[in-house]
Amino acid sequence: MRIAQVAPLAESVPPQGYGGTERVVSYLTEALVDQGHEVTLFASGDSITSADLVPITRQGLRTSPEVCNPAVWHTIMLDKVSRRASDFDVIHFHVDCTHYAMARRCATPCLTTLHGRLDAADVAVLHDHFTEHPVVAISGAQRASLPDANWMATIHHGLPQKLYDFHPLGQDYFAFVGRISPEKRLDRAIEIAVACNTPLWVAAKIDPCDQAYFDTEIRALMRHPLVHFVDEIDEVQKNDFIGNARALLFPIDWPEPFGLVMVEAMACGVPVIAYACGSVPEVMEHGLTGFVVSNQEQAIDAARRVQSIDRSACRRVFERRYLSSIMADEYGKVYRRLAADRGTSHDTAGTSRGTLAASVARSAPAADRRARSRLALVKRPDEPQATPLDPAWPPPG
Image (tube, rainbow, N blue to C red; front, top):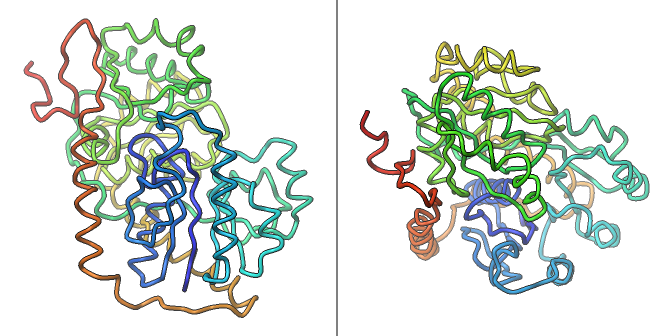
C-alpha cells in the first residue's frame, strides 16, 4: 500500500533523546517498509528513515536554535500532506487534532493514532464534532476515557526485535528514564531507592514548564548520595542504561496512555516496578515482568524482592506482545479496511525493501548520530562519576 505517516515536528524521527511518539512513528514506519509498503514520512529534516522523507523543518522544533511558532510549521506540513493526498491509499496522522478539518474534506482515507491522555472534557467535545474521524487507541485504558469515538482498533506500541539486547544479569542500581514532571513522580523513585539502600540512576529531560517543579520539589532530593543524574539518552544508550539495571522504576501518578519505557525494559530483560495507573496493568504482567503496585509500601517491598523475577521471562513477553512487526500487522489491517471502504488500495506488501544504495545512504548519518549522542551526558560539576553508559561501568568496588 501507499502510506503516508505524518509525525509531530517537536523531535526528529526517531528522536535524538526523549520523544515517545516520534520513536513509535519511526518503528512503525520502518516495519511497514520492511513489509514492502511504499511509505512516505512527513517529519523534521533531521529524521532518519528508509521511507521517502518529506522534510518540513531543518530539525526538530524543541532543539532548534531558532525561535519558532510550532503552529506555523504544522500548518505548512498539513498543506504539503493535503497537496499530495492523492498519492496515497491512506494517510496516518500522529499530530493530535490539527488536521481533523482537512481530513473531513480529504478524498484519501485518513487515520489518527491518539498518543496522549483523553480524559479532558474538550477532547470529548472534539470527537462529538468530528464523530466520523477514524482513530486508534494505544491502550484499552486510554480508550476507556473516550468510549464514543470512531475507534478502528486498539494497537499497542512495538519495538524492533533486535533494537535492545537481552541482559541476563542486573547490576546494583535502579533506573528511572523519562521526564522529570509531577506526574512521573521521581520523588517516589528516590524514596524507593533510598529505602532499599540502592543507587538510582536518572536519565530524564526537564521541560521548561516543569523547571519550577524541579527546583522546588526535586532538586534537593537529587543531592542524596545514592541519586545520580544524566541528561536525556537515546535508544543506543538505553540499551545498557536500562539493560544493566536491577529494575526500572515507573512510579507514575497519572493515567498513563501507554508507557513505552516499560516495553523497553522488557526487551532488555529488566523487570519493572510500576504504579497501577492508566495502561500499566494492561502493559505489565504482574509477577512475570515485574510488579504492579498501589502505594510506596508495596513498591519498596517489590523493589527488595525484584530479583525473584526471571529476566528471560521479561524478554519472552516482549517478543510475544510488543514487536514492531506485530504493531505494523495490526495497523495494516486498519489501513486495508479504510482503503477498501474508499476503493483506493494499491497493496504492495511483500515486495522487496528498497535499494542497497538507499540503505547505505541512510546508515552513514545514523552512525554519526549514534556517536554524537554519547557526548550528551551531564555529570555533576562537583565530582567526576562513572555512569552505566561508560565502557568501564561498573566502577571498582
